[in-house]
Image (cartoon, rainbow, N blue to C red; front, top):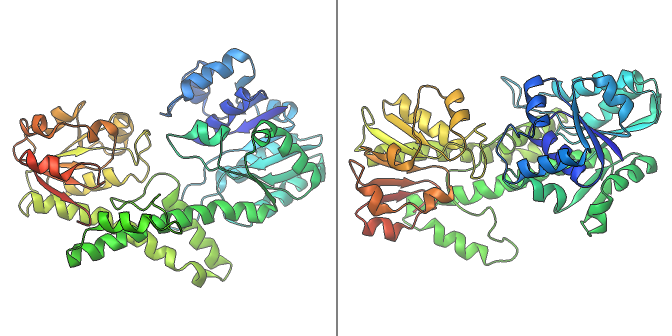
Length: 436
């Protein structure tokens, strides 16, 4: 099929590349000339394991091209995927839908024949209905230009797997024509027995918001238990292990630590609450405000632990921060817990040196007043406190004896529960973690 992808950020670039590898002819649109040039030259402008190789495969096949011409996109595509961002609105918990709305408004006047426009961006429920009305009003094809919703469920660091072997497909359609078109797009996945839920667009919109809200709740639940454990002297890691043995609960996302961040979970649960309040059902999701608050408190508690390890005063104290990205296998620093903690330490007078395998360039742009190093040993040299804030494998595997030779004081705060406390204490370190 002839597919187009509007927006070549993390979601759009991944979707375009993977659809071409599946065998479709894909034309991807963006207004960022530098990004388009990089992709066309085989360079992925963000870190995602395996994606550069997939991009080269797609380009070599001749099935993937890039353009900044919306008229070309409209003339080319049978199915148009909208993959633009929906960041949090400044000064509000709501989602900024200007990119999604702008994409549809720009594309619609060029749609002169029957086609399907498919939203993949995470949006508040009701957005699809409003955009369908806009599309029909602006498109020369009228109602023959249909709108559907197909939410994405990508995990950074696992984007290829989640696109080509997803846990499920959700097709939010308003007609059999739209259903048939999407089933044709995803025919290889359906043939591989990927579970598929066919529903209406409103339910499809809600699936993504509800899924992220549930995951955030599970993460914040175990972190709330960590707060209780700290107050009572119990061990949250042993508590989590016991809870995970209950198959009604399970162990995934039940790991205490610094909490969630990134460009999705935090802003998505806030937008979910905001939209529920607009609909007059804010009481139904009021608990998500506490989920958000618990998550933010973990960052403040981590600062407390570092301060305690420093003797109660951070002024002039060198602190080594291991990690900048919001999670391993990513260079994404949007709402990164590690960098918020690092900035707060800096604001209290600490000399903070950050190291990360992939995210240093993005971190430097976001937090230019912090210091950065190219290795853990360099960052830790002369440090009085080492804080592990992103659980990269490179940090899990650090030798506490070797690291202890370069620090000024053997004090570590493991905010991700990634280090073996016994091994580090045996090497002479004072080890502190969240919830134990």
